[in-house]
Figure (cartoon, rainbow, N blue to C red):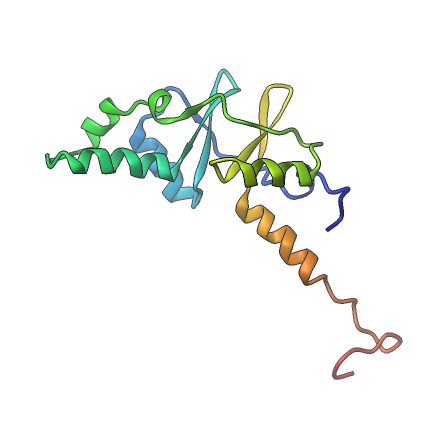
Length: 154
């Protein structure tokens, strides 16, 4: 793998974020609508936490284990985003070397890193992004085949 790669080379730039005002039901809707598993939480545009699908599942598990009926309204009241999220998450900046991000993810208990620049979330790098790095490294793109540069079948 090219050791000069930075986080900005592979991060997702279209990041959906939640605010401290969002309800658990809204967080779940973000996950389903955008097909994501990690959600940075911001306050006045600054990163303050991360919520993952695992955090939401854990909240549901706690409630289901009580054996009581649950509804979304009750869950919204019991689990405000600021209590559900992991506060002060580890983050990287766009210029962080990809190897450093890999090390952080390998050693941490999480599968995504928010990418922050000037205290604002500008991206996110997840295990899924890193799989694409590996795939490109293992299966580099083939050259374009032409008459001058023939390939299989030409």
